[in-house]
Image (cartoon, rainbow, N blue to C red):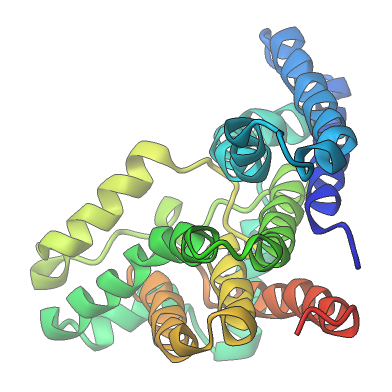
Length: 289
């Protein structure tokens, strides 16, 4: 039986080292010693948790320690996201690779869907449901693993957690070493009745307040949603169709709202599948069910 929890710890530890290497580049911020210490701390924490996991399964182990050991990767993920613009600036000094993605968009679609889609269909009856789907990204991250955990299915929780964390962190590495801003930094936001929609404004405000610059390609939103959907069909099959609808709406909504290039969503879909399927195949072979 694979050690599902420890493999997530190892993924996190490896990421902390590879991402932290960006601080060796010449454009690192003045706070780089603090950031480097944070990466070392995350790596040490992950390796320590992996080491003590077998003891946490024994009778008498403290439950709160076990819960923290299971959930800390999802608690650390937002902190790692918040530093991405500092790390990609350390490597590239404010250079972004949108021109490359714009060329791919032009070749694939004959234009720029992130700029024209909302203009071609400027209907609040369409845009607002798409923003609901786009905002469902946050429940997609946390609700399925929480359901598994509350059911007491800790093996299932750990099966879902590993590809979820890997999907995040693989994209974070791309955001550091191949940063792309995304269309919302280059094109005007949809206006008119679409731009005035309350859910559109909410989605835009969330991005304006908390997004890291350079974190567009591939779309981690799409990759995470796809990985969670694939895992849900295996672990929470009744929720699978709902997640399919939410994920498709998320992908379309991100382009419609001008938050992502269409290429971002295609690449995110492919990486989400590539991350999730091998873990589920391995766990099926291990005889979980």
